[in-house]
Amino acid sequence: KNESRGAVLAAFPEYGNALATTARNAIGCCYLGDRAFAITPKEKILSQNVYRLSKVKVSSFCKKLEHHPLRQKAGEGLIWRWSKYTPTLSSGEYCIPRNEEQVDSILGAIECGDPLPIFGEIVDAQTTKRKIELAVEFKNRGNVAFGQASIKSFKEALRLYENGIRLLDENYQDGIAGTGLFFSDPTESYHAKTLLAALQANAAAALVKLAQEDKQKELAAVALRHAMRAVQILPEYAKGHHRCAAAFHLLGEFTAAVESEKVAIGIAEKIRLDKQNAIEAITKARNAVTEKKQAKAKAKADAFQNKFREEQGTLHEKQSEMLPPGAGPTLINIDDSNDLTSLGLMAPSISTTDYSLFSSASSPSRSSTTATRLSPEIF
Image (cartoon, rainbow, N blue to C red):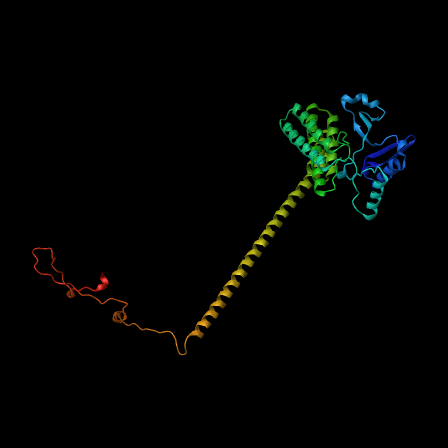
């Protein structure tokens, strides 16, 4: 129960007095701070620090710390470690009040349903964002190493994937521990879970490759733990179930392998259908928007045309009102070209007998000139 609510916290304000709660228990954190620091006289306070108790894997260079008084052995290669508590607000953890004023402000916020105030040092959002960025980098580098397809590269890929897992899972123990980072923002929470599940599944894939090369069932068992953790984080993660099937097959659990593969195929098919339905829905919505725009444009054009016709009718009516009584248009009937000539719209026809060429005045052989009658229109 404590693991689901947050890591165990403890304070040792004075000799013979120890208080404990969990990091995600607002009332417990407030009571711990009140009893340990607000009420206890300052001269009697043994330590102002609050410690977090967590189970961690022992590094090869920290074997001597297994016998440290604050690092008790918790199993083979594991220790219980006390570390200074710094709340991660994005993980739903709370601050510890240090005086009566802070205690009162927390209690007042709880009573009113307001967000709890923040005191002292915290792990801010920028730190969390940086961890995710580093985890993505480890994942990408691991994918490159995995693609080189050799025992050495598979080991390197596993190392990189595990580094990414440790960033997102602060209590990581060979893929068994709970998720370390959770976020109040649903979008960030889903992103962190998806990334952690992918790292676990990729680590399982690297271990499966190593188990196939070395014929070691122990590696297949570790691969299965990673794969099971991936599907525990995201039950609808098809790749995680596929990794489970591969690990089960190496362990000789063929029935379980078939069942896991069926689940993976079912999830993949569901995702395919969901994508297809989504594409159809988007296409339908786009067509509806297009039809709506076309209908709106047509209605606008019809309205403009009707308005134009109305204005033209009004203009004709005003012109009719301005004409004198009995006035109207003049009609001219034209029967032949003579009517056009009489109206000045056409020049009279010219025959060859109406003119003659005249002798040039400059020609010495010509003694006389004859004027030519030509219609002025031809000039």
